[in-house]
Every structure is written in structure tokens, then in C-alpha cells.
Image (cartoon, rainbow, N blue to C red):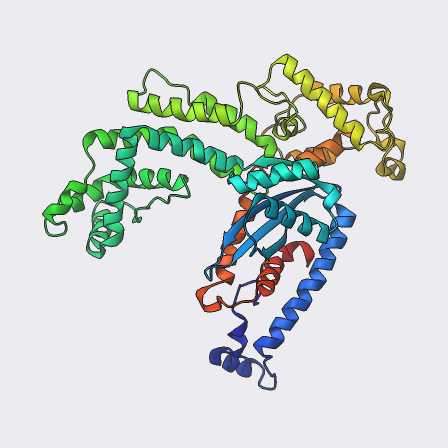
Length: 497
């Protein structure tokens, strides 16, 4: 209960809990908080051993996400989550650790800490990629690891997209002023009890569902879209309250947006909608991998092309955001050996690679064949094109009748895969690979390693929510080892129990 519900250890010593337990079972003696702490640390050690065994048995490669955060007691922690595809083609997400990080947050120290963590779990040689935010120290640490361990790295797709959108919101003066005015207007209703209650009454009188206005947050750009959308939705009751002299003081009536600003809000909400959908989609932990990034980004690139109906302000916004997107993802000069390109190629939903030309597609196939050779038992053979696919353990167990197609070379296997029609976007690519791994045994190994890479570092950032429930003001003196144990057990129980 303490682990799953994130309750304080001293709950067991609370008067109410003790009385409850004496009613449930009068003869039961409730253990002390210290005893509970010992049990939690014991379970943590046992679960770590279970996780190590799981990683050794069920994982061939793993991708990591990481981030650094500070608790309410001003203690720094680094969280590392792991993502891999099991032998049953299930995407598994785990938390490796939430460790105290009192050292200076330099690139060198971060890289050392990451190596220390993966060594602890015996996965140093299985790391495919690390997904991270765009902090300069994190980027430097990845450069160090690329040189030292040859780990690949990817910058968080959602964070990159957020920077592109923020650039558009702040660089266009008319939009910047409109958003600032909207924030001030929403702030008035959020801080005034009288105005807030009056808004509820107006909503009820007009037969509108009662909803609170949403204030935007600097660190989450989608909250700006949510603020503008809700404000537009509640425009009539908001204006009614502002014009009511018994509720709104004369000095506060200036808070209403100008007519041209309301027009900008309407146009901006329409433009921001697909960007908001894309950001949300990329952060779905179990539904999206890095294979989705370039198809999504290219879709956004098309949606941001100015139309004849756009006002000059919206055209300027679209141009700015589109330019940032093309620059950050190098759309004019894509690296065909990058992990996001290769992951899209082995995702049967996006293998047509519509965002590449024919020459680039040929280069992608060559890189995939090289990776197939690296993952093959015969990878030392220099003549990759003549390497015969060897039967896997499943082939031997199930017999030759279960193998639908055999290929004499990696090239034939790749060509056969790309000649087939792409599957619907609604189909889980892992389900497709589970059903077709015997048909494309060598390509399946490449797909297993690439499709486990998350599109964003959101999985590591989500741990902050659990940490916020763990390291509260009432528990600011928690030992860092206890923090690690509680979060580890809370987030991994569904995998290990």
C-alpha cells in the first residue's frame, strides 16, 4: 500500500491507521515505520535482482531515457528509464534508478553516472540509444559517450517541437502581445473569487458546461493552446462577466481582448491544433517510438505551408515554425543513417519512406543490410550480399514447415520486405513483427533494436510526478536510497510482480 499509493512510511504509526487496524484485527500489532523501511529496502534489493535476471533473459538491446530534477528539499536526482522489446514482442518500459546526484551537473559527470548505472544492471554492451533533452550539459555527455562507448543519442522529439513552436509564438509581435493579454485575462479569473463565481453563474445561465479557464505554463507550450482554446470556448460568459459593473471594477475592464486579438486567437487555435496533437502523440509511452517522428514532422511541415486564406500574422507564424522544424530535423539534408530514419524503415506502417527520394531510400536499405550483418552470427563474413540466413532457435524448434519464406541473402530479405504493402497506421507494428518474424528473421533483429527507442524523454520526466508524491514537504528528509526504492518499486511492480 505504501509503495503503490505513495504513502508516507509513518502512516503506520498514525493514530487513525492504528485504530483502523485494531478494528480490523485487534490482535495484530502494527509494525513501526523503521520496520517498514527495512522491508521496502529488502524488497528493492530482491526486485533489482529480478530485473537483472529479466534483462539478461528477455532482452537483446535496450534504449534509455534520462533527465535530472531537483526535489523540494533542493536535492538533485538523476532518473534513468529503460525501454526494450521482449522476446514476445511486447514493449517493456522500466525504471532503472532514481539516484541522488550531488555532483556538479557537467557533461563529464553525467556520462560517468550513466555508465555507472548501466554497469550496475549489466547492460553496458546492449545500449542502443539514449534519448535526452537539449540541455547543453546533457548534449555534451552524449558526445562523450558516443566517443567512449559508441552509444547513439537522440534529442527529445517533443522538446524539439516545443522549441520550434515557442519560437513562433514569441517572434511574431502581434501573437506575442495577444498571448500575453490572454494570460492576463485568464489570471484575473484565476485569482479573483468573485469573478470566478460570476463566470460559473453566467455559464449556467447560458446553458454552457461549467469549465475553469486554463492558465498557460512556460515549460509546457501545449498549455498555451489549451488556454487559448478554452478562452475562445468561454468567450461569451467571460465578456458577460467583464461587462457586469457589479462584478468587474472599471479599472479591470481593459482586460478584454481587442477584436483583432480575438481574431488572432481564433486563427491561432486552428493552426496550433495539429501541433498539439503531434506533441501529445509523440509522448505516448506505449504507442509511439522514434519511427513515428519523421512521418509526423513531415506531416506538420505540409500542414504549415501558408494558404491564401491566412492573415499576414498567421503566415509569419507558420513560416517561422516551419523554418525551425526544417532546421532542427535537417529536412533539407536528412542523414539517412540516423536512427529515426532507420526506425521508420523497419516500421511496416511507414516503410514507404515518403519523405525520402529514391537515392536516399537505396542508402537506407544498404544501412539496414549492414546492421543485419552486424547482428548475424556470420557478421564477420565480408561479403554481406552472399550471407545465407541461418535458421533461428525458433526455426529449429518449430520445424521448417513454420518458416514461410527463406532468403539466400540479406538483400533478398530486405527487398521482399519493402515490396510488400505498408500496413494500416492503426495496426501495432510490434504485432505485425510478432506474426512475421519467421519470414524476415534477420530484419526482425534490426526492428527489435530500433522500435524500442522512445520518441521523447517523457518517460524519464514522468518519474517527476511520482517523485513529487514521494518527496513531499512532509517527507523532505527522506533518505535518497529510500526515494530510489519507492519509485523503483512503484513504477516496476507491473513488470516484476
